[in-house]
Structure formats: C-alpha cells, structure tokens
Image (cartoon, rainbow, N blue to C red; front, side, top):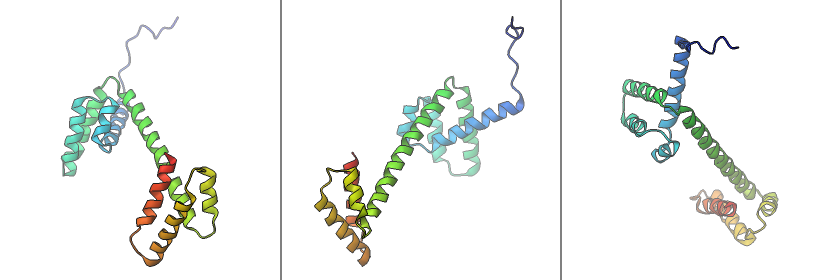
Length: 167
C-alpha cells in the first residue's frame, strides 16, 4: 500500500516555480516571433494573442520586459500550456523541413552554375521531368549576369524553376 497516496501534494519550491516561470517566458518569447496568423493555430487564448500584439507595439526595453512577464504569467495559468508547446515544436519542425528543402535547391542551383556539368546530371537524376533546354538557357543567362554584374533576373528565375519542379 502506498503511504504517500493520501497525502496532500507538496508545495513547489521557489526554485521550481522560478524554472517554470522562466520556461513560460521563453515560450512567450517564441510566440512573439511568430506571425499573428500562426498564433491562432496554436490554440492560445485571445488574451495571450492580444498581449503578444501589445508586446510587438512596445518600444522600450523595460515595458517589453514587464509585458513578457505578464505573458509568462498568463501562459502558466493556462490549462493546456503543454499542448501549446507541442504544437509550437511541430510548427518549428515543419519550418526546419522547409528550410532544408530551400537550401537543397540553392545548392543545386549553384552546382548548375558551375562549368563542370555535374549539376545538370544531378538535376536530371532528381527531376527527370525537367526541361533541359530551358534550364540550360537559364543557366547560360545567369552566368552572363554574374560576369557582367547585372541584376540576377535569370539567377532568380532558375531558382523559381527548380522550386516549381520540387512541387
């Protein structure tokens, strides 16, 4: 028989409350970096969303610090703060995957702009449906732009074409 089961829960220590407070303030800082459209999808209350909007409008360091403490306090009082943390982690993970795909396409573009031809072979291995003549024209024009130090119109068009192949 468990002798601890019938006892009342122990009051949290001061250091434990401080750690929780700091963690909720960090969560609030993460929320302030998100676009306002993403906040509603996380399942936070309207009061928290309004407090985050007010934080963005504040100019002084002291007022932002106090507002962040207020946001942290509201997050601690939420019943499902852990669910918000999990949704935020899933959102960050999705953004990480998007960033990796973006960087992959940038590397492929740079590989295409090299003169050794390995980029075209890599492109055709990954995207057999690619229009080779169009890609060669974009690469040729992008190289000329770099040599003549002109605006990177075709350089960007090449990236857009690669991104469209990815989709």
